[in-house]
Length: 381
Image (cartoon, rainbow, N blue to C red; front, side):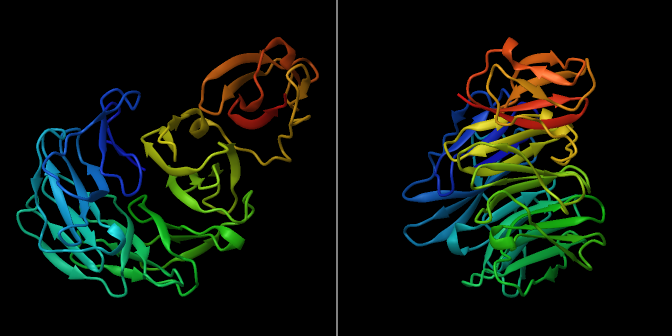
């Protein structure tokens, strides 16, 4: 599933990979209506969607018949009408085309080993070929000049590839990790100099983050370890600053780092497959495979501490128990659902205990937040 917010109210979504349906929301994602794509006939799927403004956007469509091919369409009226701006007869293996426009005129299109750039809204395109590149997974630009593209080489070794440009697509420098299972899931050109690429595979300690602090000229490798499930797989990540970032996984976990990826703290267990993660400014959206979007901005504002530094006991707890929080008496703890809805605000007593008996909580996982600290607690039946 893909989610794209053009502003705080207007969002576009493709419900699942391989889907032929595009949806639009004008109330911040609360309600959705299908966007009519009557001009598309036969079997097709939407590979990518990206909007520059609420009205200006692009989609990449993968057609199966009469022959396999990729097509790019542009709308300038919020999806009411579309025009095709495909550069030529093109085909991206696995339906993996990626599009990214930095303005109404300047944009880039990745189709397999072909990378196209335009400076006139798609009326004409320049072409560059990328060596060893078969399938693109994600593309992101910091501004008109600085961008990054990530994917893999198409082999069963799942070797990743990262390409970086700092001149608007005129040239691209590459990072080619030699290790197995380094296929890139998500990329981000975070600041004027910092570039991040996150691998898809996390299992058996093979998860990696590649970080460059000099516009892609050199790279450091950070191993992603100490996650809850060693057989997990990343489905999305986003960094809000060089230190603070979050990642979602296919096993249903949400993790956060406060030190640039060296250590990760689990924030939530959704107990369902998560297929993506999207951030618009300070709003966070976690996407389930059941096409449900969860938002919890409080996760971002909370400062995460290590479990030993802020232990909560007992955990799991019963709804009529006292929970020891190791906080000062009078500290106000906010009890939130995983979706971010506040259930109650309770003061800790003089011994730092939190009385749950005064709140009727259904069994499940909750977030406890106080003074910038965020902890999890499970309520038993």
